[in-house]
Image (cartoon, rainbow, N blue to C red; front, side, top):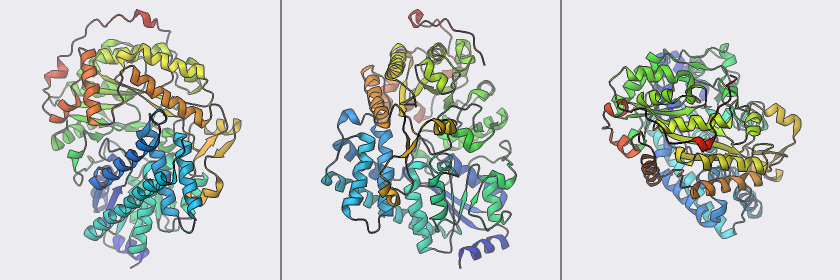
Length: 580
């Protein structure tokens, strides 16, 4: 049986087919994969499909690879140049794996020349051939484990359809898995989707065209919201003579978020996660210069509060998780109705998610109410401490407003994660220093201070066209390596150059560490960060250890009292009028 016969067989049987959906490494297993769980529940309700969905990132075989590879980088790269090891290191791991799976007849001097360049243009240090060979052995082991992992599920479940949700970090393993499945099981219908099409493989980019034209082992590609697209594709309602499909192929119809079934995580070991995931909507009402969220999802849509509450109550009770991670790009539009609704129920539920500094966060009474309603952690894209950079990034906020929001959220006890972009086009050293100054002023009100060096994609960011008009785009790696690297990394010929941006990122982390602020990646660091937060704030939310035990009573958040915050007169918080 070939792929066409497989699809015909599914359609003639009323959509009764077996489907295997996977999220392959490497993607940070902070939360269970909401996208796969949502597809599983939707397709099973509307298409009579038997869908199995798994997250490979929680498997011991792959966490072992992760630990080995990052352990090697930690041993080989000087400490001052690897302060963001668990962030920037993913770039090295991804590109090394991509080169490994694409190597054919390239001699060692070419192949290891690329691996050396990959490491250098991330950590700006040279590794020896022996060190590179050590890392190579880890990648070889990784690919062998991918083969076994995929084969075990394919042999056990005998799927008609094999689908992968792909992020940038999981792209190499995903391409290899598709190739492996098609080579050994040519009758299986292969489908690719995921957020990688919002940036690295943005439609129209050279990387997109390469994946479209040079992956015969991938039958179909779905971009963006996948529920309706994938269902119609499998049901034969879309033209079969195409490889790539978007919402335009279904007249830009969006799935009704108030009618979708509760995400189905039943195949996944939920004990491996600190939280369970849900969402209040899709896309974002804002357009920051470096972001691709609105480009990928389109118009912002949100769910009714009653629908959200019903879903998170069910997830809380089914999986015994008190903390729900809301996977939205932003929670502001639903913050008040969501916390109001949570205050009306008797489930001791907390939620974690992304927040944009706004007018309501300038009032302590609002943040206290959100805390009582269960807001556990506010992840804020502060981005910069420079007024000029905030304007350039289209943030529509001021430094004074940032200070007030962070202080109010922290005073309410809500954990504050402040996220920054360093090395944005045009950022001067003086403006970078303004960011460090802001963090120092707010250090007692910041739970975590995280940063990313600016990343440029060929297209798909809000300011892509403007940057392209002003600056020259360049391939990061020598073009002689194009066939190995497959999906190219691009950079802008603009100050600050990549090396300066990455050097600032290292200085950022070093500065934050000296202030005693943790950026917790491991459980022990989370414990220390939680102890620090509890010592600083009377209203501090429960620790993650307490949350994990699942026995925090409802009275904990309901008893939060408003109190006079510490003196902040030295922070100059006489706010200007808001203009939006």
